[in-house]
Image (tube, rainbow, N blue to C red; front, side, top):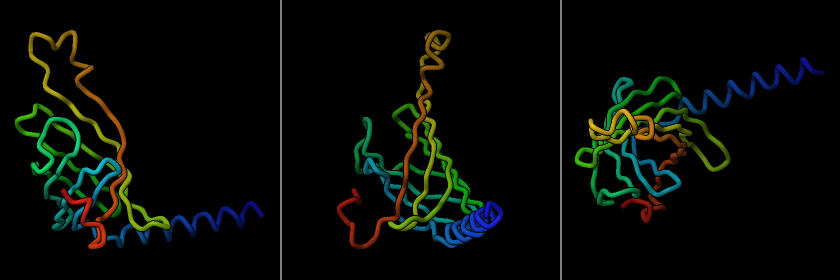
Length: 144
């Protein structure tokens, strides 16, 4: 019985990975906080724009991104130029009953004045997670 369950787990996980790798990343994806990312993919390289709904930037501002996709693995970085921070997301694409998603972990670093670096450098880096889902034509209210 254990062998049967193990073999089924392997088969199901390989099916899930195959489906996730078939998901097209090009397009607009939004996370649970309303921020949106527009991806263009060419030969494993990602480019596009990020619109944040958090912090000081104008919600309509578009910040360029660069990144990579390898199979169902994704990583991208955004320079919030003029706001003193950079953020990188790394994650994996998958699918569930609601459709495709990208589950990520992110790190944001903010600029710390040189005179304060000895005391404040580690507090300049924060981390978290985000889940991005593609925006469909039926969800225009998510596009800002």
